[in-house]
Length: 338
Image (tube, rainbow, N blue to C red; front, side):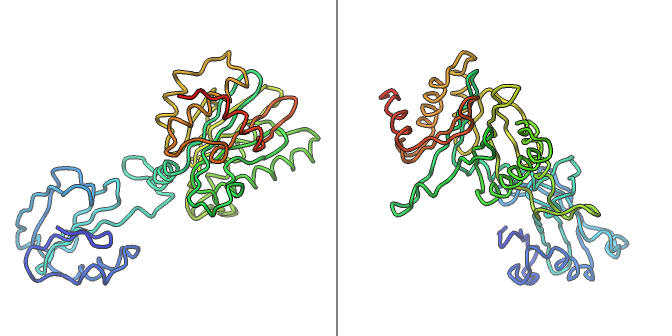
């Protein structure tokens, strides 16, 4: 068995079908049209789940009767794996197992899953680590700034941004996608302040962002389509309003939850375990700063310093603010040596 451009080929004899390179993986109907005119000679029954290209499919072949061979609906067998729709075509020329990635972003699988949304969550795991910690005094956000080149200006790597004077967010995933979500949140905050002469609540701002996250795909009649795919970014939204300091986690699926402490990104698993052990309700803002940096230090591949991490805080008195280089150097110096 071999894999070429998303296709799996199982030859029965040496008279093979055209090479997979002649077809586009995005054009699923092409192989179907070529094979519909052929006469099927085998039937297949899967005996285990197929996950190409990581495992080999286990299938049982059986000869078809003469009447079955001329049944146009019997010349293919379809199944679904987490990698896409699997279709087996049987002809006298050979057998093809074709894996077409799931492209229906608004279509549920038979198991009730939206594969493209699940894939977008995987994109977040490739992003830099971001951590948020809420205390009674305010919320601290911290992110890892990946510096991929000595020629890169670290100040241009923005992983924490301000949404309003009392709200900010940290991001992990595709930064370009985050820009669209942040701009939408800023417009919502300004519109609410203009119409009602009051700041937008943190939860309402998060709700507006998650509503945007759901507006992908073809869209319904009269509904504007923002993206042709789900957003590949997750946000930690921190703010302070009449309900006190709050920290929310927003996902590409449109789901959001409130947390006392949360980590996202490539190092989220280890960071979340550390937060689970170290967090307690009596933390001060200074304690939260130390906890965020100490956790980032454990999951970062590079040595932590004032240049490759960024902190921000949101409090009642000062609102949202991003730490300066001098403040970052001071906080990093407070970290324990080990």
